[in-house]
Length: 263
Ligand code: GRG
Image (tube, rainbow, N blue to C red; front, side):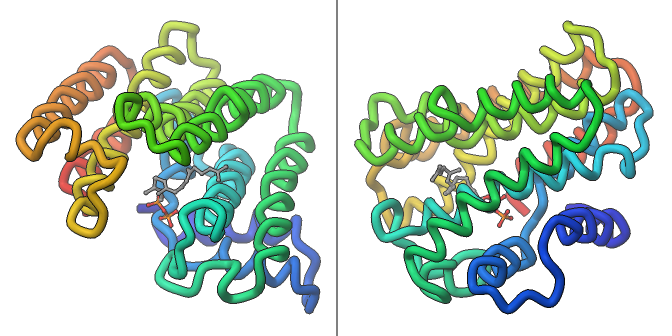
């Protein structure tokens, strides 16, 4: 999703915060998962949202890097035997399989922590971003969603999707808006766009997973045609969010169409 140059900038930014030539197992585990092939959707959303306000990608790289560290932490922890127990992530062995469980827990913790170290070095505008991100990923957000997911309550599946997936999409967009000095209304629109996009992304993921595992899956709740209608409705809402914004929304349309096509 990110072009080659921006991806290099993003990787260089994260790399700045990791010790060089370090053979330490923890750092190796962090690097192993951070630099594995990823789509970088959330960094793209930060850059695309700030583009609406004519902000150069280079100015948003630290925020994009911090959000990618948070996302990578969530994937490492989600794969653990006590959570989803997945052996493969980003096309390679998951972190606990490649290293061991303790290292994977700690690598996730360290990535979460480093995200806030990256943000703390920036100016006061970033305090607002720290607030938005903390709310999106903490006990009211992603972690709450993961707790509900573990309890596999299918009545609450849309809420689970909102909490564990869409809130980080929304926070990524809101971060771009904050950097761009968006008005409160524009910020809210970008937040709503991110929520709608994240819900589409998670619904597509459920469609893909359905053949392997029907439990705790939105297709089981809405049915195959119901989930298509649900996605269509979210697409219309996300498009209408973008229509309500000034400036260049091309990148945001691009990512919406890509996620709709699931490619
Ligand atoms: C363990 C705190 C904690 C949270 C876990 C976000 C989350 C909650 C788990 C991630 C696992 C998962 C299946 C989330 C659904 C969204 C999803 C498919 C994430 C994978 O994101 P991509 O496709 O991955 O953007 P890449 O590798 O491209 O970054």
